[in-house]
Image (cartoon, rainbow, N blue to C red; front, side, top):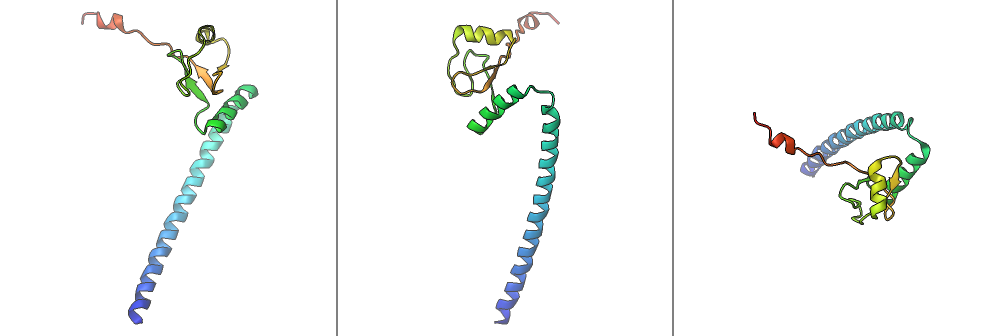
Amino acid sequence: MKAAEEALAVEKKAVAAEQQRVLSRTAEDEQALATILAERQNLTVGIDQRVLSTYERARKRWHTSGIADATSGRCDACHIALRPQFFQELKTGEKIMTCESCGRILYYNPPISLEHELHQKV
């Protein structure tokens, strides 16, 4: 009986130490989350509310990012090919465009040619 009580006391100490560690980690995580949310709030101040709501809608719907690369002529998130005229308009970058299939905001990142660098003599 005495051995069982000693084992129980040791286990209680281990559980208490684990609880303290968990509480400490939770406090750290909550502080980091608050910092990130404050930074996000500061960054979203300058964004048009319609664009922000479009992004939030896509982000919540897909549980990932609300944006997708379309450099290859297709939405990299849902892999649907973009209509040629739509893709040309996206390449101009004059307005914010969303994927007609998944609703994510699309961006075009033009490829950079380094051919001239390869042929230069050092």
